[in-house]
Image (cartoon, rainbow, N blue to C red; front, side, top):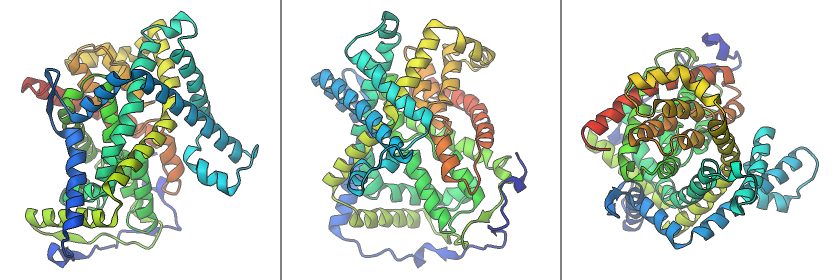
Length: 486
């Protein structure tokens, strides 16, 4: 499992003799600044950053504008939000079913229908197809309040539907508006380029990998994977770099962290949460890249090696470079209103792929938690550790961390009603686990079969990540609490 030969392929190119070109920032063509694209970049970046990170006072507490907007939508028409949630559930189940029947040869979609349905987007495994369909049935029962009392209780439907579904179906599409402004109109390049000087010394990665991480954090892990795959196919990354990027930096995106923070009612400390989550992610990455299995993956390329030039320059030089990249992307990109609309559409589509799965898995987990001792037995060995680390509600924290390995949102759901310290701790750990067996792990195995990434290696990495994250997240949470930030 840990030997480098496990990932070697004689047909692939060894990168041991590859030497990157040395360049100064002065060698980069900054281009001529134009007012319109500069203003477009600044508008998109400040708007996106404002809604996610700018603290405001609302109803007696400090929160972020996204929380205010979500609260306003809920208070204006909760019924409309619930109907929207049911429609998204239906769309996810129906489109997935059409897609799976098409790929299994049961039905045939013509070219025009395929362009509308986009079956490649909805394709999944048979178990997750079942989860999405079952989620539709559960949604119908909970929306119309029809079914057994044990299912419609506050502990089950009160969390699955009233909290989880209603929050996710709002936060991800609405958050997608501002995330897309950042991702498509220069924010991605600005943040990624600015982070380049730390990537090689801390993580032994090319500077361009900062863009992959930023794509995951601002868009989604799937966007990060596709970007990494594209660069890998062109010889820009070797196998070790691909493995590190996907398992250390493609963690939960900003919108998903916001959705979980909303579910747990801790959006008022969202900027602090994001900072702690990113710090924990970077610390764990700096450790894992230096130990097996990541350190044993060979530096093989599947295409002619095209290593990134190594730039040198001052902090001011890098800021100019990053700003130039942001403006250049904004100039080439769509208008701000179109980016916002596309963000909402993309966020809604993403919600359609996960909502049924989350409904099914979350409801199952909540039923097991409410009516059986399954998770208590499973988490029992870890409760003393949580107690030693000073985490309130140690049993809840242990269950949430374990459940988070299966599905990110479900892990967070377990902590509803817990102490705020526990909630912050759970958000940090589950957000930074990176390897979720309900989504990211299968996608990595499928997309990077030529590395190859295998479930057994991902399982080892998940265990290592969690083992490191738990004490790091506890220390960060207690530190933030001690200085009055949470």
